[in-house]
Length: 339
Image 1: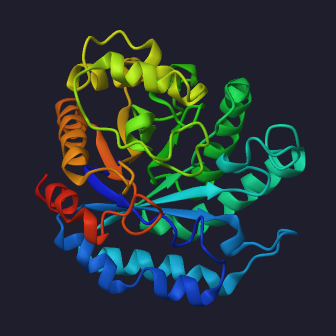
Image 2 (image 1 turned 180 degrees about the horizontal axis):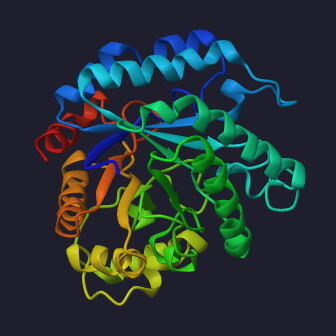
């Protein structure tokens, strides 16, 4: 099993791209970026990939684009970094299309399921020989809670496909509701012990996503500090909707380590029950937050990851509204480098 301690996401590179062009892929992340990540004392990168990069809409392989993945893995090996190969978006499913009717068919369409399994057949066959540095993450975020059982069934099928080609590779997957910590308990036991269970962590959303323009229920003119007053966060979170719920229902008496420990406790229990290792594949604070306040949040959350031996990967390296390389986020960047 790969030992993933401290990583950073390469969001916006081969996934959620501003434009899906070879010019973008060739310039967004280069060897210099990978070397810089290694110099910041990270030990791995999480590499999100959208199917559009390597497949046409009708399922034909775009063979020429695989070299962007190959080059990144080669640069990481040279820099002493591991890689989490994450299918961020598959044909028929994307975490950011949950409210658009007809776009997410993965759990209702045999064609979409077959496309997903064929994609992993290709990826696992191609990268099986990199099991010493490459882990394979099945799918970024399954959102809808009603897909929990269907997701379990698809996990079994995908793991079987991968194991046929890559018996030694580490496999990573999480639960539903945006990979929330509380839904790992809904997973079936892993098929083998070379499996890592993952969750994403952005709690409380009103702090980590403050002023996020894609969340219409979050005030665009409110700067949210990182303070201990739970009632302050409960009041603000009550108007967000589903993703604000965890803060509203939390039992913690104050914001800080106590709150975060409560929020990840179900993930820890599930991993302990399954005898599996835990990994937080995404966590972070939007670059619209005060960097000093963001550092306080990171300090508390990372302290718990270390306490429970949870590997983690920051979202994200550059741009994407969470990029730690932004000029205003030097304080955050320096703090993360020292961890």
